Length: 77
Image (cartoon, rainbow, N blue to C red; front, side):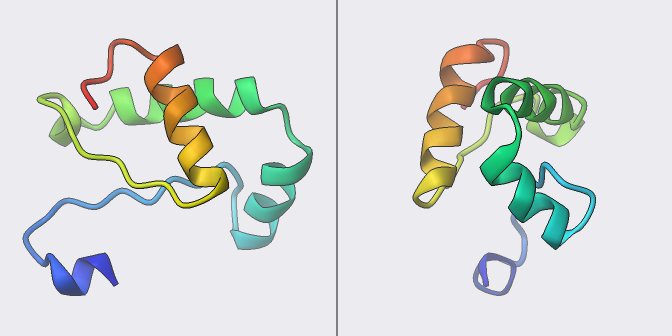
């Protein structure tokens, strides 16, 4: 939906699993600190995000974004 509304915007969808089903189960049963570290490293490797970015997280995703901001200070969110 965001891609359609903002076609010139670089959008990164964060996933902690290898597919939607794995992502769903990991979001419930995996270690949240490990997930935040994994996501931190993925976002650091994306050169289009080096100058900073906006983050949107809904519900549990909002908590994940807050943890990311607190635990990954190198990112410019």
